[in-house]
Amino acid sequence: MAKAKVSFVCSECGGITAKWEGKCPHCGAWNTLQESRESAAPAHRFAPLAGASPVRRLSEIEAREQARSPTGIPEFDRVLGGGLVQGAVVLIGGDPGIGKSTLLLQALASMSRVGKVLYVTGEESPEQVALRGQRLDVSGDEVDLLAEIRLEVITETLLARKPTVAVIDSIQTLYSGELTAAPGSVSQVRECAAQLTRVAKQTGITLILIGHVTKDGSLAGPRVLEHIVDTVLYFEGDTHSSFRLVRAIKNRFGAVNELGVFAMTDRGLKGVSNPSALFLSQHAQNVAGSCVMATQEGTRPLLVEIQALVDTAHVPNPRRLSVGLEATRLAMLLAVLHRHAGVATFDQDVFVNAVGGVRIIEPGADLAVLMAIISSMRDRPLPQGLVVFGEVGLAGEIRPAARGQERLREAAKLGFGLAVIPRANKPRHAIEGLEIRAVDRIEAALDILD
Ligand code: TYD
Ligand code: MG
Picture 1 (cartoon, rainbow, N blue to C red):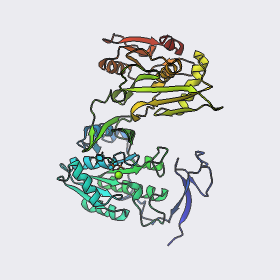
Picture 2 (picture 1 turned 180 degrees about the vertical axis):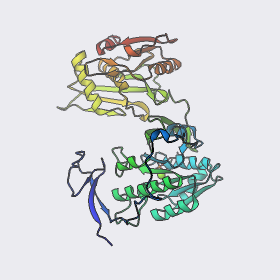
Picture 3 (picture 1 turned 45 degrees about the horizontal axis):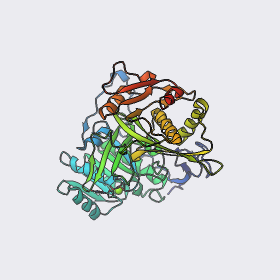
Picture 4 (picture 1 turned 60 degrees about the horizontal axis):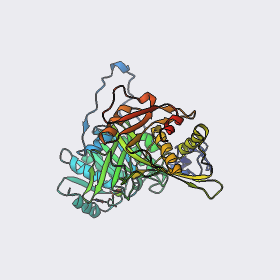
């Protein structure tokens, strides 16, 4: 056997180096290089299947809309962009215990009514899966089960049985006998994903790979996994609350940032079709440090409560902590607040939180974060029924957010009476029941609170 080639792969960026270093020379991350052994590939492995493909004109190629098969779970279909595409490979990641296996077993069970499905479990015994199936009340459905972690056996089974959809639970448990590395290592995960993707593309089997998430929230294993697959979904949410969100990070067959909302019940995950009021904590009366923002997730507006706590710091460098919002953005907002509104926080600890375990990545949350901070500093609640959105720029200007109209309409529907929004988002026609204050500077926005 040829001598295995040793290289080191960065788990952050997927960059390859010849020798181990503490810092990845490609992306600068520390301690992310992991050993990867590759034995020389047999010559046929990457050879084209049936001769080389000819060069063709783009305009001559018939663009066919990919047929989608719905999973039978409407919220899941929404994130997938309408259903599963034949031959697509979907990677779904999330914390342990968040409900990945549950959701996919439910989806497979409902898809088994129209086609052949296969559930490959490498983590749990068939008995455990059967027990879950009983709880989910899907034991009557025709889901084929394979308890296996050897890649070669799995690919053979896929080729022999040709299911329409197969779930691999999870990609980290698989191992290929051709590599010496342990299951879950960078080279195993990458090789197994690549092999399975090849099988999916060749045969048209739709594959759903379950992946684990590391503590800092990225998919364990190399980032290259995200490049191999067609769609990347993340499960989010607080394991302490019953709500779970599935978000599309990448989707070759649909829009990203679509959000599926589920509630975990004793009979599995149930879709929540009207989630906009889910992330508001129901205070009996208004409290200081709380501001409701109208955000937009894909095609759907959501109202989320942003909370802030500003408290005297007792250490030389005060803490800035954000849960569900970007931490670097918080530091920037505090600087803007100081420079343009004259509010200093250098001797204060600042904590901000998006209620309900939701993660907000759009900059449209800026204004709500600032309002909540000001409210907490002054220990005065914001006006009753206030809803806010808008991005704050470094010059203190308030920039518009996408789909302002829809956010406002949703807020009005849920009974909010006052909206502070960027001037560019001001609707041409009044919205019934909603008083709108359009602002273009941070100073003007804060004046409303006086
Ligand atoms: P699971 O799907 O096993 O999580 P993952 O595969 O992401 O690790 O989900 C498990 C959690 O969900 C577990 O803590 C129990 C809970 N659960 C319910 O509350 N109701 C149910 O019907 C099921 C099947 C699980
Ligand atoms: Mg699981």
